[in-house]
Length: 270
Ligand code: SAM
Image 1 (tube, protein in one colour):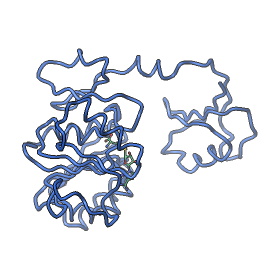
Image 2 (cartoon, rainbow, N blue to C red):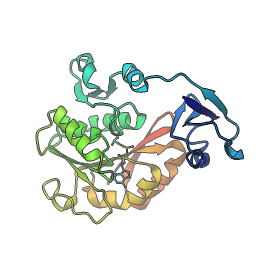
Image 3 (cartoon, rainbow, N blue to C red):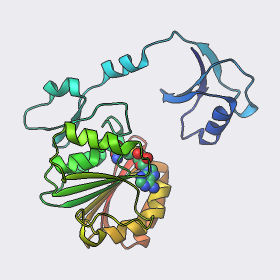
Image 4 (cartoon, protein in one colour):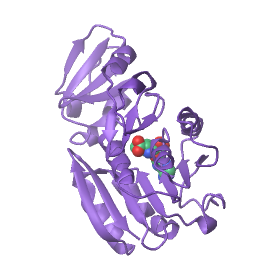
């Protein structure tokens, strides 16, 4: 297997990632301050990305290795766990089973973990929760397991919807307590009336990215009842101000910020 090691991270070399894809990279990964770009053959690369090193590495069963290294992730009252580690969930914790690797949201990313923690800190009893960018469904399912009356997960990627539905079934979420639909807020899409009358929810959570939060902040205000908690993550620390400004513009208050490494979670109230 041929891997090109480029010094830097996805963030510091954001402008160079396209060059790697255009040169024919078949995959990109970031590990320990290096971008690892997988190639089928050695090539001459453009000057901007010529400061890396080519390495031939032994083929490995990456999936088996990834699965072997997975640990349960404790996030507040919830432990996100792959099916084969269910027995490791501590008594008193709410187990949330996610089969890793099928859609974003195994609990291992700081943003997912912080969002589950933020949900777990709320009293969700009977509440209507909207999860924008649901991926594996992890946040909507967490909300349902924490007692939400209903949770609606939306994602623009149609491939995520059957995965999220299957994860809800694995977690024995009663039918109707977690619903997953292709779509988003801000697309003029009617949201199901039984999920929330007039499309207004008690809690809104979204793990997207700062620029999208900026674009969608007005929609968040429309879909959240006055005083309802908003939980936003997927935000790089360097882009926090963009989100703060958007929340201010749309009249959100009580803003709190939590950081984990380069990632931020913001909470606010409508
Ligand atoms: N909610 C999961 C979690 O917290 O782990 C997955 C979050 S993942 C970072 C973001 C998801 O948002 C992806 O599944 C992506 O397809 C979806 N997405 C991206 N843009 C979106 C949009 N405008 N509206 C709804 N979903 C979107």
